[in-house]
Image (cartoon, rainbow, N blue to C red):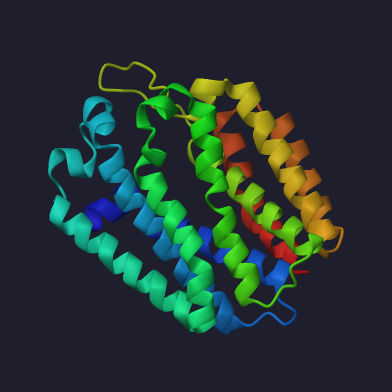
Length: 270
């Protein structure tokens, strides 16, 4: 389990991401942010990401066995039974956190996300079609997070208006930045052949960088509409320029893109 978590779910990085999105929720949707709510949101998001990690192991098993035979599940370092128990534990923690944040009404508001996330685990019953259309698959999976952030707005008492809608879209776009940065570095199979399962490998580096930059700027602009100060927009512009200047280095793009998420999260809390 330790080996698996180190290789497939590094807690320091994923935990930081979960905290960041908890901070964004409080900055955009809460009148008076609290440490207790932040802790529960971070725990809920960490559990969601762990549940997704486990279902992805099942969903992508054939692909990973073919091109990444040295991953923990493929080489037998962790068993299917252990991963199932891990996924069930994550789901329990997720639901307990949801109940603690919003009670019964909050749990009902969470059901749409649970339903959509279950559909992502089976690729919306269109696995072969989505496998041929990488961008469509990417959009579907990212849009699946809209109900999650809509739930966050609901339990924090945000009004059902245009500002809240802008905030929900802002959080989703910031998540897009984190997702593309996570899968920006090229991956190779055991024969050294580039695997077309990362964004630069499919879209090309330039287009992937453009999507990162535009998503970052759009997230900040929408956050401004949602009621944050211009600080968030200034932070986004600064990182967008830095990424554009450093675009020839994968390491620089990943580092700047990764740091931009917590930086923008904090700026949205202002």
